[in-house]
Length: 229
Image (tube, rainbow, N blue to C red; front, side, top):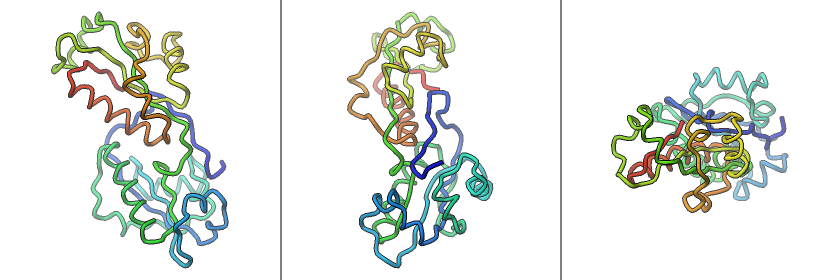
């Protein structure tokens, strides 16, 4: 896997549960790689280099996975020296979206100190998108959907919110064709609502997954009836 390679995402991969931020110290030789250098124009020679990410696994297990090429980041596999649990001892397990924001904040703070940093939320390719599908109001007859949206304001739209590594148009077509489809999107999907998401795209995979969760909650607060995996 190349240092900038990322797996594709889809709605069913939206992260759940609690996540920990972890930091890996990288060997100084990582600064010899073009991709890493490009993301760290403010690096000060002699400062340490780090990889910052989130995981729902035990952090030592996640580090071992990197080192053995399992869903790895190549910078960690090739240049990983050691975990730095002392950096994250004050970060409790957090919901995915919150953990990702903390990851970005912490990575920026390290860069502000002149360190070299790679954080997937900031530095992975921006090839992912969020999207919103308008659903036929008949979906409200579905008891499960209705129970998930007790604060729905009568007359407000019903929508499906997702994230994908393809274009929103292609993902909508896949839903309707039954390919990796969500039931509500396939059965009740009427079309995309680009006015709700177009300005947000594209973004990194992690940012898309976190944004999907945040966007769904924002729309619920506005009275929409929302399904988000």
